[in-house]
Amino acid sequence: MGGPGVFLDRDGVINCNRPDYVRCWADFAFLPGVLPALTRLAGLGWPVVVVSNQAVVGRGLAGQAAVDQIHERMVAAVTQAGGRIDGVLCCPHRPEDGCGCRKPQPGLLLEAATRWGLELGRSYLVGDAASDVLAAQAVGCHPVLVRTGRGIEQSRLLPDNGADGVAVVDDLAAAVSWILERAASCR
Image (cartoon, rainbow, N blue to C red; front, top):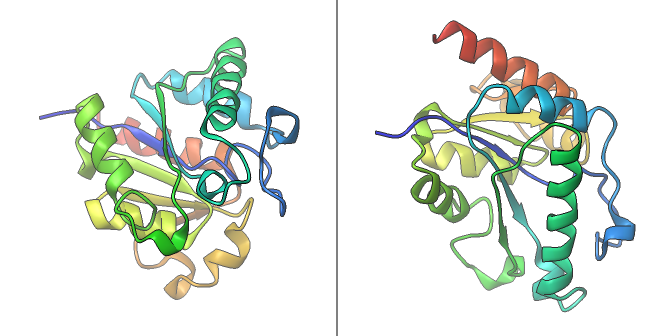
């Protein structure tokens, strides 16, 4: 049996969403408080894996190499700040492609669980969209919806604003605090 892990969506959780997509590193901007939050999360010792839909590739707006470079630089910046991202898994497909890896499908989470030996029922997924919540619920992860990115609009799609077992918090820093509190109570 594996241990817990933390899954993070990228756009709207780690970096600012852009209406014209993040196509290169110059388009990437960390949201306020993200780097210190990831440093705190690294102290937990659990694997941290970014799981992101990146239809920008499938739509031909950016190549896979450009997206990989964004992720390499993101991981390097997080590491330099004292945080850690153990891996980045992306779905490059368009929504209409119907693949099993694009959230809300759980393919990325299942792949990460296999790669890092994670127990999904003890893991958390932090996202800013209903698709993140649905992917987490499909595999028994604890979903945490942040109000950054699309989160304010998306939280309105949830019954009773999170009363269905979805934690709704302001941002990644609040999500990390919420996760750390639960991890401490399970020790």
